[in-house]
Amino acid sequence: MYWDGNMGVWGYILMGVSFVLFWGAVITAIILFSRSMGAGNRRYDAGGHDTGIAEHLLAERFARGEIDESEYTARLTVLRRGRRA
View 1 (cartoon, rainbow, N blue to C red):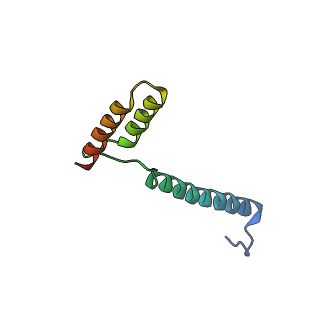
View 2: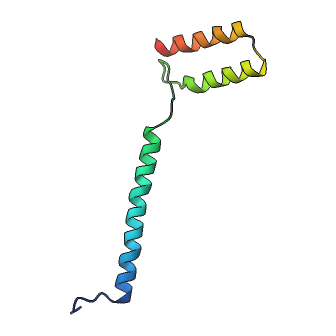
View 3: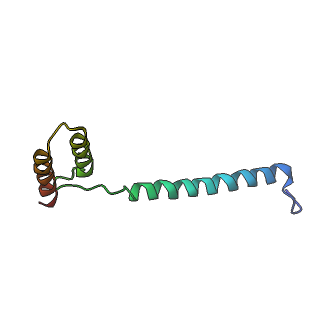
């Protein structure tokens, strides 16, 4: 076939759509990768468990008055000791 350097209307449309899809996939991959790597300030104990959530729940219980200060500090110490071990 002889194209004479002209792709035609459908060639330009296909080129434009593929350009948008390619860069959309690249940007999506970068965003997903950065979200998976920047998992926030999660902290894991020796067993690989996320203690950041446990500390947050413990702080919420303390703020609601379900536990007193001594129980809060004791449980927080246990959580943090398990994380360092």
